[in-house]
Length: 531
Image (cartoon, rainbow, N blue to C red; front, side, top):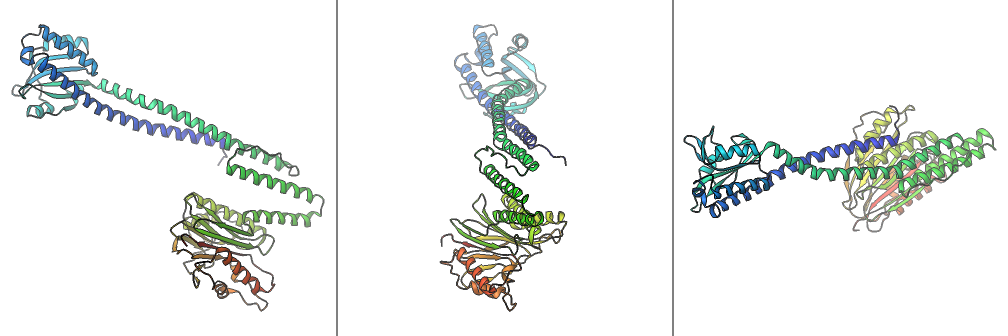
């Protein structure tokens, strides 16, 4: 795949997200505009119909008075008011009429339209006139049978294409004397919906675009630009490693600062050693210095000792490679939800190749755990990647566990690693299904296991360099001596540091000064919540 500039990739990602957000927002706003328009229209039509009923009963003298003549002042005043109501409530047509279902026909007392030509026709041909009806609408049937609530017709009906609201006219005696029809054409409805939609969507779209551009600018200034500067500096440094690059100005972001500090430290070390190599015996000194750098880098990634305490846990680890660099690794870090992750692994072989493989596996495991994968998911994905890119046919064992901050329910998965020890009063060796080592076969099928720790209990993890340590008589340290070294563990006072140091002292005493032929690593995690 052709590499793409991170700047272009981020711009495309922002554009895609922006377009998707606007499309989804537009759909939601259009639905809300339609729903609000229909609800508001119904409320306004109820008010309009009540106003007409009130004027019929108190101002126009009722239907009998209007029916006398369509040329009377009272009648003309009523039509004028209907035209005003059409404008006020944004209607197309307004009718006051009675229905004769037997014929069928409609007798129009009053009618008016927003269209001048149609209004003249109504005044001349429909006022105080009975006209045949093609059908009696369901809404009219409901009102004729005594229903008093507002009715609607959503279709092309006798009053036109659109929505017609129907209300009963109830006279002073409480009888339904006529019907009031208030008609909105489809075009008018669509216009109202579009106006409401644009009124809501335009400010949102402008604010979304402005916010996205601002965020893109911040990403450019605080992330893309520093990474570009680092990349350029690295390219220049790669051309002449004897000259240390000038310090870079980076934004106050933790990850960028850490990358920059690591880069500056790396360039400082590399520049120093490259200049030293030129003055020393080429092959011997170059090998020694490279091993020294590798050891320092490894200790930067996997320190000789590590201590980490939280509100609900205590962690301590020690490691010692058999050569300058080794294949053992461990890790401990917190997730966003406060859970603590512990990792331990052992890469086959020794020296540089094991250290490189160790660095790759440690970083990959940490990355996947931080993304949110479970221990088993993490190891299964690492195994598939390792099998796909493993030209030296190396393999590694690994054990991954996650401890939530308050529950004490330890979730773990084991890829062929040594069995852990449950730290409690009279510690015991746990023997869960270990699975296969990473890099051996694809589709390893590792599964998660759970272990509930009570406050004060914990777990001890170690590499086979601990149990395979030998004394002068060539006897192995083994799990029996390991459990013996842990027999005094106390759930009330025991700590991760004391536990690991007791194991380390026991191995040293057992070995009696014998050189270790394998890397040794041990770590302990003690659950301390509410202890």
